[in-house]
Image 1 (spheres, helix red, strand yellow):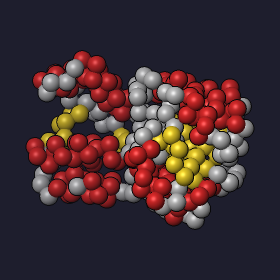
Image 2 (cartoon, rainbow, N blue to C red):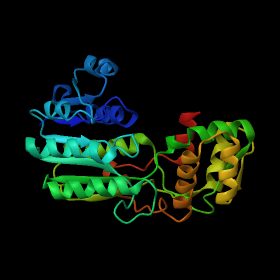
Image 3 (cartoon, rainbow, N blue to C red):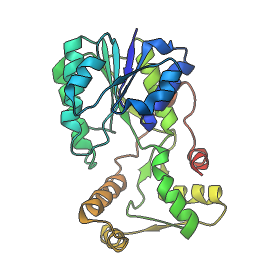
Length: 284
């Protein structure tokens, strides 16, 4: 069985390959797809086959899928361009007759009001229409997403956001990578849509307390209204588009878009998910 990991030089892709190898996969049976293959030299040194795969160049996607049985489609990072990029992989997977396509989606992608959800919803619809046997991994937030908040709070003692009392069921990126590796290697997952999140859904007051524990100084969560948050971001020099995106994300969190957790991630990986404070400590 040959497994292709797209976006293999990204943070999640590398961890998925690590997890596959740790779980006993033959390096020669792993294909690392990368836009810039020079960045994958370390993977090649471990015996992994490296191929060029650029979502924006469908011919590279088709070539990368040659002889591949299972594919992990890691969602692209170019917000606004994801649907055509993902379509290139889905179309190539259908043409190649792959036995399983695994996609990293967003929480409740088909029903969520989260600003990031529409592109994931559209991708899931493309996968369903393609007829390719698939597994959907709806990943909640990575704790690593809070690296900038950690650094800022370490300096200022303040964590400011417009999420209200919204909760986030984050987990470590490695937790989600392990789940992807499990699904890629095991049978019996085709047709499943897994809502994946950390074991505990925490508030930003909890996040402030965890950051305080990690950095060794008091950190206070300061809740802002959307208008106050937008004004603060504007004062920091952010452009209108970025301000709108950030405040929309916070509004989604406030409304519960990232709050659900039912233990599915922990069950898939066979252990508890990484606690918030441990994930932050690794960042620090």
